[in-house]
Every structure is written in structure tokens, then in C-alpha cells.
Image 1: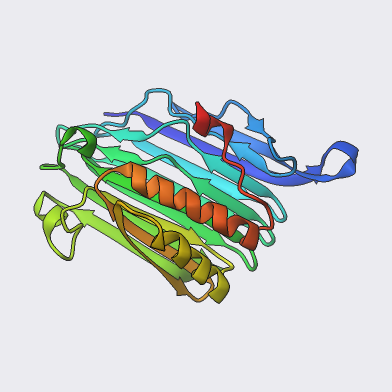
Image 2: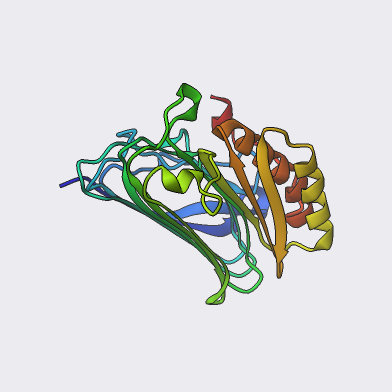
Amino acid sequence: MGWRAELYLRCEQRAGPAGAPRTVLARKHQLGPLTLQRAFHPEGAPCHLYPLHPPGGVVGGDALDIRIDIAAGAHAVVTTPGAAKFYRSAGELARQEQRLGVAPDGVLEWFPQPAILFPGARVTSLTEIALCDDARVIGWEILSLGRPVIGERFVQGALDATLRVSRNGSPLLLDRLRVDGPQDLDRPSGLTGHAVSATFVASGAGAGDLEAALAVLAGAPGLLAGVTLQGDLLVARALADTTEPAQRVFCALWTALRPRLIGRDALPPRIWAT
């Protein structure tokens, strides 16, 4: 029997210094080895959050549940201090669920570090982003099947990863990746021989934002990438041989799109520099 860990965070807009609006961490609940030490405000009003998983890895039988609620008018930037590591399982599944809700006029920026699946890992993962009315999200998910930087392939194990984005209960994106052995890494309908699969989403986008994203991808070597606009949801997908090219181009997309969609220049979280 593995670890069960829960982390619930709620961010709300309150009056800050001199009465200016500021997002604060209004509520936190944690159970087991998931925690958050404190909130940061490096750019004033938005709240930066860095959830931690002190064990440093996930094994078969572990269950991680993360829930984040962004209240009306609040703005949170959420990232992690390091890659999530899913280790070889003796048979049990490791489960991770991340349910993210954003109320009207709220903003969530969701930038977890890559999830690395070691050969033999058995993982089911769900990330669900529920937007209300004009709520906005910019975020990404990056999965590495094996550790390609040392030539290690995901020759055994299983992954069932789902990414859902909805607005007022209506689906905007339902993306699912299932891998059950090395054949799914190589087949044309799978990862075509690549080890890294990555998805970037940004809501509230229009034709001009799509053009800006295309310009970023046109100058992005080292990966196979494409971008589309589904309603007002911009979706970019990338396949790469290592995580670095995907992270680099997604950071470039964020830098280009954040001022357009949120009205703020990109300010990388300080933890990315450590």
C-alpha cells in the first residue's frame, strides 16, 4: 500500500498594501506528503505558488490529489521545484489527479515541471481545468517516457494520461495519451519514436495570438510541433527527444502570449533559476 497525499489550495483577491487588489492564499489543506510552504508575490498582485512533494518520487500504489481553486478576480502562477518522477512498479498503479478550477475574471498560470516515467512505471494521470465564464488559463503539461538523455527508453510500463479543459461545463479540449509498451512509442499514431510529449494551452486567444504562436514555433529547432485555435482555446502540441526543447519553446510561447492575453510581461518564477 502506497502513500495517499492531498493538497487543496484556494486563492482569493483581497486588498493589499495601499488598498490595491492582491491575490492571497486564503485556504490550504494538506494530507500526507504534499505541501506548500508559502505564497510569493514577486510581481505584486499575482500570487506565485510552488507545491512540494518531499519524497521526490511516486511509486505503484501512491495516490496524489491536488485541487486548486482560483476565486473571482484572483490570479495565481503555479509551478513546481523539480520534475515529477514516477518509478518502476511491482504491479500497482500510481495515480495522480489535478483538478483546477477558475472562477469568473480569474487567471491561472499552470507550469509544472516535466513528469518523468521510469521504465516499468504504471501511471494514470488526470489534469482537469474547469473555467467559468471569462476565466483564463495559460499552462502546459510535459511528459517524458523514460530518460532519453541517458538513452533509456520506456520499454515496459503503462501510462494513461488525460488533459481536460472546459468552460461552464462544456468541453474545450479532451486530450488522452495511452502508452502500453514500446510499440506505442514508435507507431505513427503514437509518439513516432519520440520520448517526450507536451501540450500547451491558452484561453481567450484569437487569430492574432495564433499568428504570434506560429512565429514562435517557426523558430523552434529540435522538436516536432504544431498549434491550432479551437474556439478561443489555443492548443500547441510538441514531440521531442528530450524535455529541454519542449520547455524552451513553451517558455517562449508564454513570453509571447502572456502580454497579449493577460496584459503582463512574462516574469519567470524565481524557483526556475535554482
